[in-house]
Image (cartoon, rainbow, N blue to C red):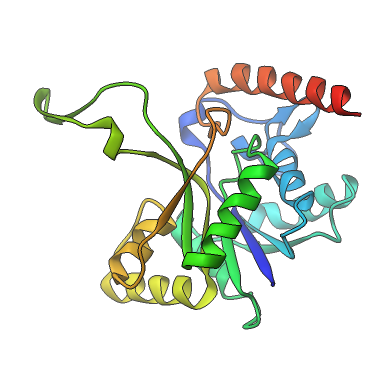
Length: 242
């Protein structure tokens, strides 16, 4: 089975509020250093280590492509990663990467560039679920009470047992994901994730595989402190296993 991973990494990261050390004009959150390596490198390594993953395609801004290729080479990942030009939005970036995949690809997994703490076990589980069902995503059950509001007024309290906080990877059969993107393009629909595009087709039910609280998306300055803690815990666990 051929599984391709798409990592959209063309975003500007405006919520971070500060920038990475500049190199060839690069100042994106996915290039911010975490233990002397860019966050993107940590993320890619998780999928390189997965026995189920066949190829990895990273979509980047045009200005970042050359430098990123050098970055992957410097970390010994140039043989594992294909770099393509992304778009102005996440959806455009994923679609650009999707267009480069061969027709013999069975499954496509899309993963946020700034979720470096995805566990290999979770990767394997969501791929296995998508193999059976055609569509599967990672998510966690919220621990806080969730309110539906209008302006600043509460309109309803939503039952937590029927809610999930969506994470990545999100995995789909290639033909299904291609149809979802084609339909979205025809309808000028912009989704917040790949699952929202697939859901619109009403052809399959998207399954959910439980993830972990550690699979954070690094978007704000405070997230970096938590990321450093998780990286230390990962390193300690790896030493213990070895």
